[in-house]
Image 1 (spheres, rainbow, N blue to C red):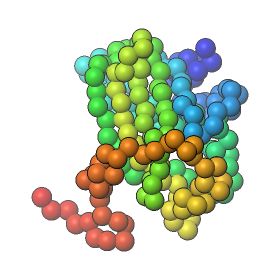
Image 2: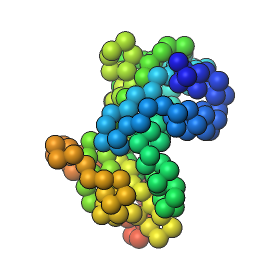
Image 3: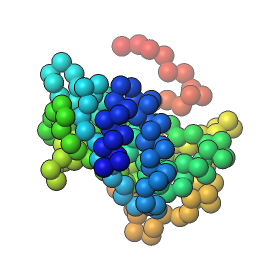
Length: 191
C-alpha cells in the first residue's frame, strides 16, 4: 500500500519518485542483495506517451526504482554511499510483450543474474496480473572517484553470491556484441 502511495504522490517527476522510494524502501522488510525484490506501482500520466501506454523509455526509469529498492532493503545502498561508490548502467536491453496502460497496477520484479569481471547483471520484469509485460537485462558497474570498483571489493563489502548463482552463458555474448569501446580508446562517430 505504501509503495502505491509512492507511485501516486511522486508521479510528477521521476526524481521525486526516486527520493520517496529511497525513504519508503528503508522502512520495508530487509532482503539479501541476492534475493528477488518486488515493488508495486501504477502507470501514471507522466509515464505514458501519445499512444496512451507506458512509454518505452519509461520502463528503464521504473526499473531503476526496482534496483534502488533492492539496494536499500539489502543495506547495500548505505554501504555503497559510505564508500563513495555509485551505480552506473553499462548496457541495457529490453523486450516487450504487452503494453501497460494508464492507471494500470503492476510490479517491478528485480533480481541479480550474476556477475563477471566487467559488470553486475540484473534481470527486471514489469509484471501485471501474474504475467510478464516487459523484461530487461541491465549490466551495471559500481564506480568510485578512482574508477570501477573491483569484484573483490564488492564481494568483501556485500558478501559472496550464492553458489548456485551462475551467470547465463548468453550474457557473455550479449555483453561483447553490445559494448562500446572503453573510455580510454577513441569512439569516433561515423556511419
